[in-house]
Length: 86
Image (cartoon, rainbow, N blue to C red; front, side):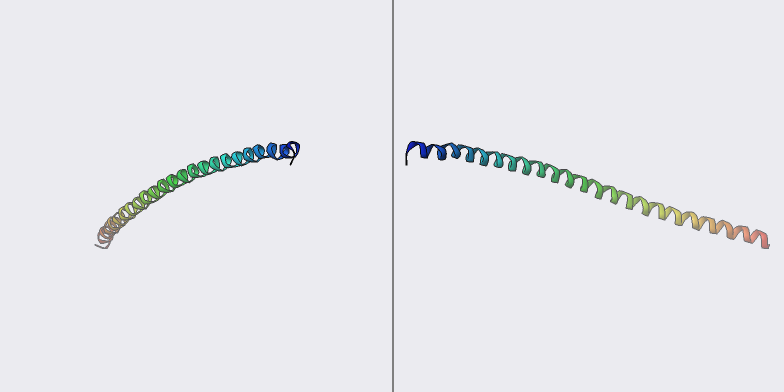
């Protein structure tokens, strides 16, 4: 091969390496961004689960209070019925 024939190959090689380097850098940036997004999603999921657990506990508390109020009202209505019947 003459030097002129080798030159195009030599010129393309740095371009190929440069292109490969650029693609690798893009891949690294993509992986980094995806990991950050995953970490944020995991954190949001944990916060949502904690909020759901808190709300479930609040619902149980309110249901228990409602049951107590209902029992007191039924007892009061029973006492009123005794006054009316008596």
